[in-house]
Length: 555
Image: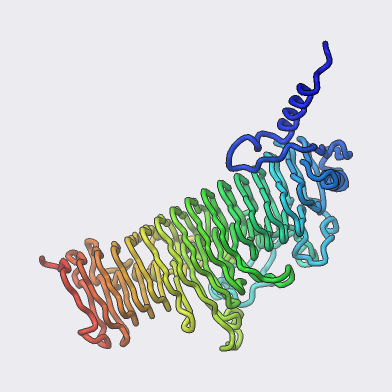
């Protein structure tokens, strides 16, 4: 056989490197791993045996790639156990199909950072141009045990189960409370041009991904899992003071919240807005919330798009909360399906689709209120084209000192049932709104299903609302025989209600209450099936309501 000429040798070398980094570089939507030197961890004495400590070998490979100006650290099929791995700029990690990187079960293997909440299997700060990908698995090996609760004090669920005499057993991470280190699988700070693709990330002790002050981050095609029954504090992806982040085509099933937006973790560094983020084509499951705008937001979360997502086997669908004075604005959520139910008592949520909540921190902590504190603000939020199967109420509440402003719900279809086996049910109305201005509700449908709950009342309940447009509502109250109205307005002014339809069997369709209710206009509604189309409480002035061109009973 003759010698290869130099051109053929170069071609064969490039093809071999493409083979080593796997097919992820060959299709759109996943990061292209640059064809540079490949650093196989086996060449640095990694054995591929789970019982051996692979951290020194993997870290040497990472450092060698960085020293070479960049490259790919390659984990071939096998089992590798490691403590903290410090990432470097221009270095890609590729974990092959058949390879599993296990987080060490020794807490001391992660005790490398001065800030405990930054402990992680993959750790990096002030990096650029990095990628973690492949078809292998990263396994945090988290374990849990059950014991009586010693943590929750004022949590409303705790008080409910106490009142009902129910069990207060709950899960804790192994080693609690003596163990001080609960590592993330990934912690990245102040890094840019980051790609995470293809891998499975499972059984994290803490937030699986913690991203702080990062930009140009792509998470695409990953699978993430922690136990929905036990994995307390194990969020999926926490996005802290980041910008220009995309999460796409991924499945995230986590005990705690799946995706969290927040700004304001002082021990990590200066606070910056959390902004310019997209979440698309994902499947989300959580014992807490699928999408959470965190109560710890102390600055601004804005310009967020969530689209084409399936939310199932989940407690809360979407929650927007503020307890530290920040703001949430310019948010669009669309094309969602939700299938929600209650989980054990120690998980936040009641099988509810939407939850907006503003409180001062002293109010959140049930301490004496400091009026100097801001309750924060939420404005310009649009939610449209959603189908919800749920067991709990959606509560969209502003604050007496900071009303929600510019909220729209459009093309929303609710199917609400109860769970007789749950330790409690707190649902009253299907959707409740309070302290809201410039509220638009369009094409809302509410269906009450079996099994039912005897405390259910109105489909829509609106209190302290200014400038309401309700255009297209179909539904009834859960208890028409008790003359509960399908729609309840209390202290509502400057409202237009049109294109609403009373269903057969409706007793009272609309009830208007409150001395400040005024300038309410009813146009083009189909009240034909209602015994009482609308009813005014004695404290509402008769000239507060103008009704024109409505299809009334008997016509």
